[in-house]
View (cartoon, protein in one colour):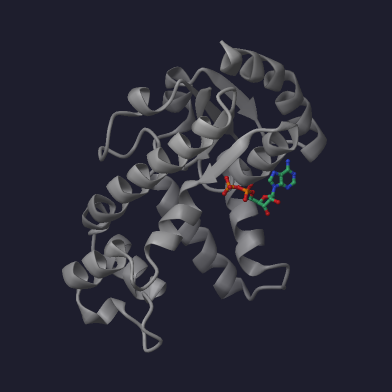
Length: 216
Ligand code: ADP
């Protein structure tokens, strides 16, 4: 078995790379998706967030109002309070799912996709959670352009909306450790500034080593 962390800034292409690894046979967990599932009504994380931040973060549909929550977390500087609730729960759930996967397939390569591997101080240290960590690098310009393109869903945005999304991307990136520092902590670095084919080539080259290590 091999537990691999796949990290990179927003828009660096983590999900894209994860899908390429999955095509080779890797198991993939997305920390974002797990976090979202844990924030659904009925979950302990949902209750903890509502209790901590108040009824203002619950929408009329009974679910978390993610915009209101993001406003409080980022604009009021309370993101660490939110992380302290969400991160340990996500990490615990990932450990549970990892155990299930390795019980079924002892030679599994499990990739855990997460923008914040080094940034979070909750749960066990990242070195205990991962045997290897892969960094996906892309220039800030490329990351912001991808974030804006994805958020706009292919529609033509007004200049104002475009500027707001740009600012949002920059604010989020400012909360993340820069790629040069991360690269020093990672076992492998993939660069995703070019085409999809160029990324796929790097994934293809790395896969045999991961699969082999997982068998040892
Ligand atoms: P992350 O998971 O790191 O936020 P994604 O994998 O979702 O990033 O990629 C962000 C956006 O950029 C997606 O719309 C994706 O399809 C696109 N993208 C990623 N890598 C490339 C690439 N090499 N060429 C073109 N588009 C890409």
